Image 1 (cartoon, rainbow, N blue to C red):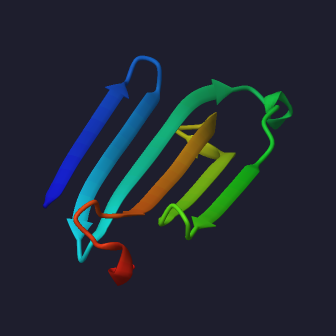
Image 2 (cartoon, helix red, strand yellow; image 1 turned 45 degrees about the vertical axis):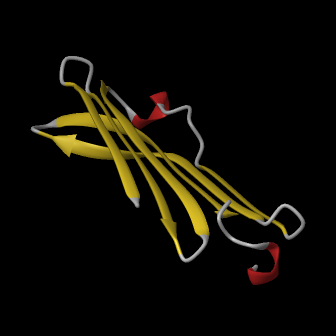
Length: 112
């Protein structure tokens, strides 16, 4: 069984785009939920001195054998400069990945 959810939210007036997806699967006694989130904002700036954001990386990995659960989370935040038709553009982005694996309810405790 596989359930997919996909969202694409675009705002050309504000220079913003958000893409989110969620996938839920159950296979071989493992229930997995994978969530991805991508967002970016584009702004026109006059100089690179206006940039205030710093790159950011966060990774979390947990494993709990008693609860038969594994969790992975990654968040990346940053920005880049681009030149478009002679204008300096600041592109801020945020990406997240969230993976959760659990033992299926149908699985017996001896098979884990």
